[in-house]
Length: 155
Image (cartoon, rainbow, N blue to C red; front, side):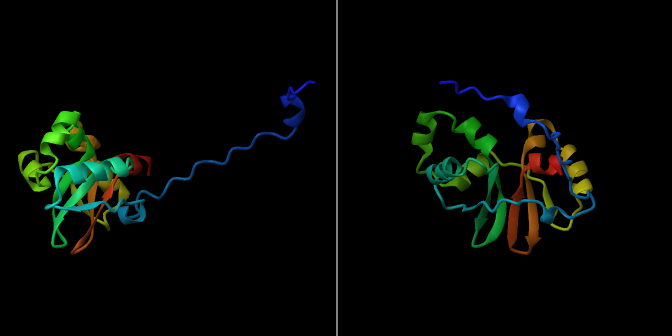
């Protein structure tokens, strides 16, 4: 019984690859895929670690209190500090605000109407490893989302 597949016979039509379409760089960043990832500052470090574990696509979480923006905590900062099982267990009951006060992230906050081109320029001016951190997008007075830096660069 011969189960081989004759590829040459099946490829009679030319292979057509559609061109990749990129958004116009003058479009606002609010049109890009944004991540809704908020955590109240009273959650414990263990609960925020669980959020990161449950949402591997989140590059960070926006910290809020009573719906108001406080800051951002990046996945990178959490994994550097809480990278060991022992650290996670030791700090699991500590409120995340205590962690944030010791390791604040200087997040880049941009208005949702900011163009992609301006956002890229602003993001690339950041120093060191923070250049890869997500961008906080302010959509209105009390609504913030995250924009993954890789998504911005691809746009």
